[in-house]
Length: 321
Figure 1: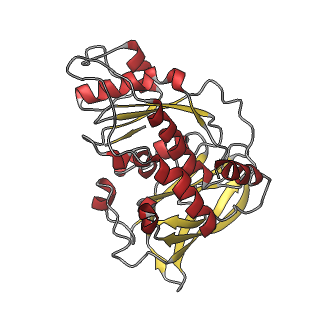
Figure 2: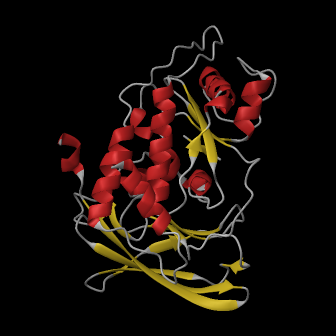
């Protein structure tokens, strides 16, 4: 897990969406606008108010408001797939906070840092082992949680960070950060997994999606339950005009929900993926609908096909409202 990112009405709609269905329910424009404003924009962080110091190995603390915003942002990405919402556990924040300090002090990432690391602590080591980690750089708050969803670079071909955030069995996270590092702590001792009624979880999700949240690597997951085999599965992406878009599939790797990942080569370059750049607006893809067809997924040995649409839209204007 490594990279170099009316409320009650929303909760009610999320719970109503958990009834079993043969096809994932598309996110409507009205839903997207409401959730984007109340979850995504409301969780924006201009500067990370960290009071620690790498020079003195002081892990410091974050105000409760940052944990609240981390919870909102994680839940935005879960809500758009109609996943159960999570809570951010403030009691566990000491572990990712110390882990974030260690990553900053050593200017590198590791889930298993050695005891000779600068600012090493047992708390930090525990946090590092169970956290999504990033070094977005000084004051790069655009990476706040969203960077984990993007999972930039070829080294993140299994999109492990995204899979943790969108895992159907997750209930709690915690969060720690400095001015140049962050750690999203995945709390795994209370899974008590309940089979999900969702047919699949996709990123980008089915329905309307803001272009600025679309990354180069797309993914499709089957919730735990059936035995899933993606070895013969194929992905096809087409525009509304019938143009076939070039995709490059990655080998499926086992982790949490079974997941298939592919790179949208006609939408992004490798360089754009590496540096989290997005030129969809300039390349004319905003306003387009892309149909994804995934064929020959084996569920308990039976072949199944899936089709959904990603409707790329522009919500930049909402930031000024």
